[in-house]
Image: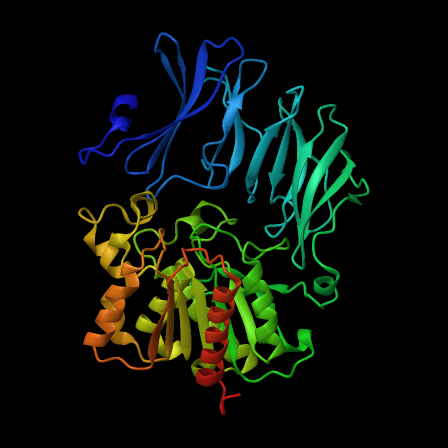
Length: 470
């Protein structure tokens, strides 16, 4: 298995990572992922080249998950690692020869981060055990047993244990307050002392809301997590329209109770809600935080189940709030921009307008490390790439569309949207526009660019979704 994992027929090589040496410096723990991303091997190897397999995990989609590639050695000579072997990311230990395997954590929740205490007697774990929408910190003996919860305040904790094991330095945030540094005793229910205050007094004076987390029933019976911003939360009157923001990054969680990776979008959602829009954000299929099956539900078809979750959200808005689909806008950047294009090209009757920012238009033109996991190789699985790429469905565009892209984008290259623009021209499509940002990369840096982009999005939705336009 070791030899077979190293290289495939296409010349792609396995990814090999060193997880650490044992205390004697005579044996290493390694992590190996096959070129097709479907097999993961955790093994020990000594200086003579003798290999002991600790775990060989095979996934029909692709191996991955939170803390993928985490691992190390214990003072006893045992090894530890995180695996999705039971469908959720959990902590395991075993003897250096692979025997006496033990699963130390269990349940329908995930281990997101693992650290050893200075004396290497306990693990410090960051997990979603308390709630899929929180990150709490726990202490667990290296021999296993019950976990001791060290933090309890709802939100997201990122804590480091002091060398003497008595205190925690905790970078903590909530949905409506950005991360700040706190210090607290490393024991349950200890009071937290805040050491920093980052925002300005002007920013803090605004009523930033903690959006309600709801579950939207999907057409396949799943319950899709979502956050909702209601106009009433901002003292506004509903205008009869709604907007869905689609997070990017593929494998990322955005429905939670800590400070969002998309903090600009979080603030823009307030702007929209304050002007009467009902705003939804979904952790659609493919998002992080909900186990292996949720993670891999987009295998071989991006723009399939993940897009259907957005459509099901529109149906929910229509059923629960009486909002017509032609008054629902959708927008997002990167993967969110891709979903926006797929929504307007393949499900136009469920949307009234869309803004696709730095969007992938053809996955065969994106980087192998990402698409190789989800869609296999273009030459081996042309069906997966074709059914997942918006450029092949451009004839379906019926609604107003804004395409915005940085010319210097080194992630999703600008030529992606240039090809799409030419295709829309050839098809004779109207009602769309391309906004190039000549000096911007994938992540904009200049405030003027962000301001211009958000202005265009707001104007698009006002003109396309409001009757009469505001």
